[in-house]
Image (cartoon, rainbow, N blue to C red; front, side, top):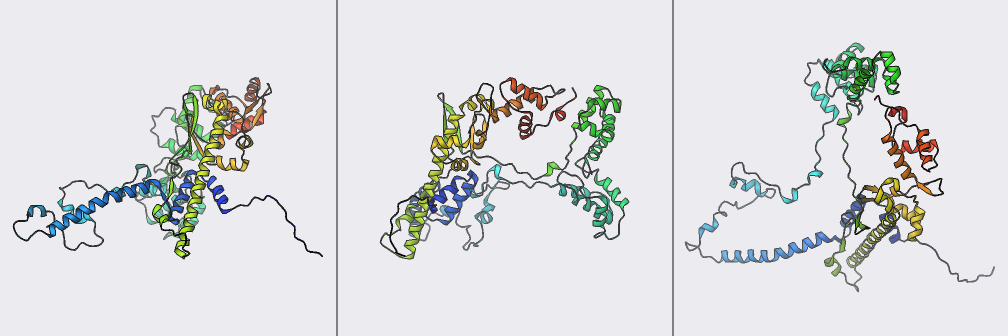
Length: 501
């Protein structure tokens, strides 16, 4: 076999580390980006925040004259002769200063005696915390019930039973374990064996605690416990008890005609009983759930100025970084020492990271501007005017790949006069209209929601009826499509929306 050399030209896409970093930053949310920037700041000495850098330089400049003045004053004091010529009134505050200060002692611990009695001492600036960042200690359902159990005159066995019952409650306050399982659990720890009747007796005591309806085994028992704790003069209390005891399933199915017939109630009596039941809490333990409020940080702002919609990046969501000039000046181009090479590597990584951040911001701004250009009708008139839009449309307009558009629009939020929306919200499939046009699925959802809000609660619209109304408006959708859109908006079916008017 003869060996030869051949020269071939070709193009190949290589995923360089810089490109991989840019792609990774592109798909991060604002909170994740902030965490990533913080980690890079801690690992790369060449990077610093512009605000912190300017503050540090200003503070250093201010300290120089102050230090010089202090030095001059100290020299003048040292030159003072010993005797009566020196004004001792200037030393009234120095006489009380101890010669040796403990290392771990704060200024306030030594000199707080000079403050007036009862004078408030303000915190250091470093200790100031924003109010919304304070995490209060939230009371749990278990601690709330234990506090009440400790006030009850219970025996040792009964206390073990009460604790076992509390441990068997779920987050909504319902008793998940059976009484037989509670008996088995208590007999492992109680000083004396217990029987089922003791468990039932303690359960009744636990069910009298706050919040009302706690430790119920099902919804019917939960509602009945709350009704028993109401004063007898509450209107329609008797009818509400009868309804919960014998006809709760009919109430769930909204069969009001059969309810009135079975319970022999008039229209007003049934309406009052249902209103009383609806005022009860079906999940008494839910208010003790530790659910923290999560805030959305918009990545872009959209506002109208002089008749035109403008898109701006949120400066708070993109940290402004810069190269530290002090460390950069320490680099020597000709040296090949390990320290100098390490500085060069940090500088190169810092430049790549800043460039990747700039690329992320530019891409996000371009995509957001293209979306606003396509969805101006939504900004002007609302969700019913939303136009059909897919990732390919924006990718073709900007000359980018669809995967890039997908990364940019995921977990990125736009602040508009109509609220804060994820960029993905503006993309939706289309449905054909009778006039040959297209309607956005988001616009169809908005129309369905509007129809449901305006419907007669006594005779709610079925999915078939809504499909018929949409067809008359020129939108061709099937009943199952209406049902899918309705379920995606968490709107219950017509039989569950029915109310007694």
